[in-house]
Length: 188
Image (cartoon, rainbow, N blue to C red):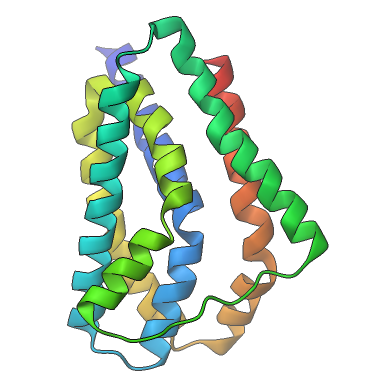
């Protein structure tokens, strides 16, 4: 029983870490939406619709990845590792650029969330494959964290000091976590 609990706690921690790492940029977008006083309902619905599309695409990728021999699955860690290294190199050359917000409809928020989700998909696919026995736990954690992220975005949208800090350091934190996740998938 205890190893099962440890495994679930490890998966819970990894789920929180992968969600946070892949959605720091989303927290920035949510903060901008809330700071611009877009109606909360529109932001939350748009975020859930866009994130659901990211999950669906990731699950399709997992289904395709399951056709791979098990010993090759670890090589899926190359995706987040490469993405993290690329972002670290970009962050070193320039400051993080601000995303451009065009409109504030539910559809535009969902599309912006989806278009911002390439890093999510490249991280979620190998993570879902590795945690496929408890995929239900990962998906529940992610669904819960979308709500938490919306709350955080709303809170940040009202605090300019914190917004400046995220803007200053967020472009370094995300790639570092991607590199760590890529290494974890490669060696596990």
